[in-house]
Length: 53
Image (cartoon, rainbow, N blue to C red; front, side):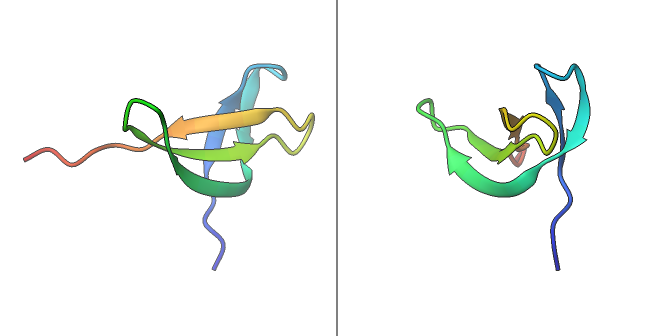
């Protein structure tokens, strides 16, 4: 099953489905999904919501 994630590509200026999304942890400890734009190949990041207690 492939996870479909959409994000905003700044180069194409439109919402696109991420190609090969992977979960990464940024320097500040925040979780994000990193993929690439299928049209231009620019890296696209989508932040993941954290659980609220």
